[in-house]
Amino acid sequence: MKKLLAFVLLLPAAAFAQPGITEMQEARSDLTQSFFSARDLSLVVAAILGIIGALRIYHNLQMGRERFTAEVSAWFFSALFMVLLGAFLQAVFGI
Image (cartoon, rainbow, N blue to C red; front, side, top):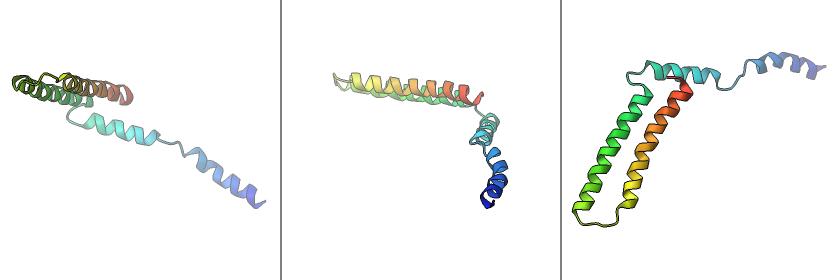
């Protein structure tokens, strides 16, 4: 009898415990209220990474280093990751 009473009393509490719904709504409202959208911020960071990468590669080329293809791909893919991260955030949070 006690177990049945405890089950009946705790049943409504389980119905209100939907994981993550309110947190996703709070995150969405926080991101939409910011000055920059997440996509714009990711594009700015990707542009900065591209400029810094281009300067470092140019410097290595001027110093006579012949093997810098790994560094080229590293800077390129870091900038590409930032662009895709902005698109992902826009798709997930709808901003």
